[in-house]
Figure 1 (spheres, rainbow, N blue to C red):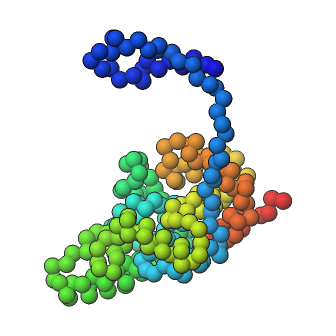
Figure 2: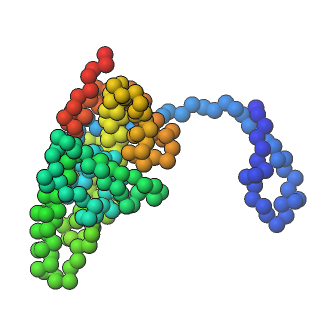
Figure 3: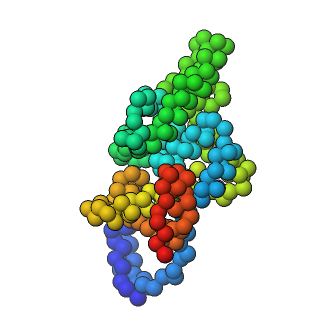
Length: 254
């Protein structure tokens, strides 16, 4: 047993001075170990099945989530103005494009780095599918305004977080894959950490965990460190996911 002081945690009531309870209590220092549920990265075949059961623009949103680690609120807040031009950009020289996010969890500054090919496909969506939907709705109602939201539902409104969650729940169920939209963020985190670790083996000045913390927008590196164990436990599955997402395979460590 150890003595624990609880004075600072007490609320000061009107008759606090009459409280006769001790300011120090005995507490047992032994606690029962709890099972730690680690996040899992989706395998390449699971990602493919999920994507096949998502229609536009939700498949595109899934690609943004799994390639950048964007949260649900960040995906829904992405605007047309934030989408960079990709026409004429050489993919060999600019494999990734940095995009500062305006809305993030806790309001912390964060920049995402989607692959150029994903930005290309999103520019096509904005210029073709989204534009066609907006024109059709404006013909029906001249006062219709699509707003700045990049991703629109079939009614022309911005995709909400609640609707996005329900669409992905249905998509995972149809694909017969356990998971949720947030699992795509886990997939990004584990695959990116594995890639960073490989880069750090050649460039030791790079701290893979610190870089991942910044990419994910975590306030504490302790939150990020859980993915170290994920990489160690699921190395082979992560290698398959990296090959599917980035066209790269981590050499077998065995």
